[in-house]
Image 1 (cartoon, one colour):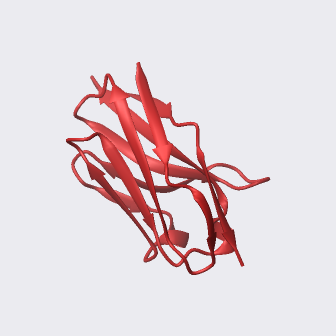
Image 2 (cartoon, helix red, strand yellow):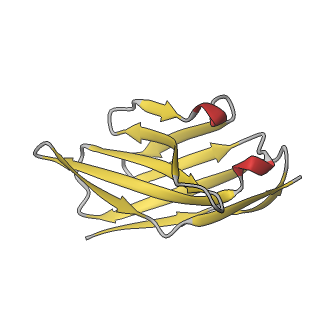
Amino acid sequence: QVQLVESGGGLVQAGGSLRLSCAASGSIFSINVMGWYRQAPGKQRELVARITSGGTINYVDSVKGRFTISRDNAKNTVYLQMNSLKPEDTAVYYCNLVVILSGSGMAYWGKGTLVTVSS
């Protein structure tokens, strides 16, 4: 079984910074994708950023230049450095892990951490 434990959410003023962390444990294979999604009240969950085990990175346009995703493969941990935060970044942020094995992907989710950006 795979477990994802997130940390680092909280309340911050607009223009501030937060760093989210997500540590994965369990049956994690070397080929995978780790990422962050978010869900604001009344909105659908959306991809924020993801990084493959090979280092390929994708960001949603709204966070490009402000957020940086990184990972430590030795620790099975993914980070999301969020700078220049805006009130519209307020959401529950979910860690996501997709394990790729024999051509198929299995997705796992963390419980979420709340990020609130005040104006």
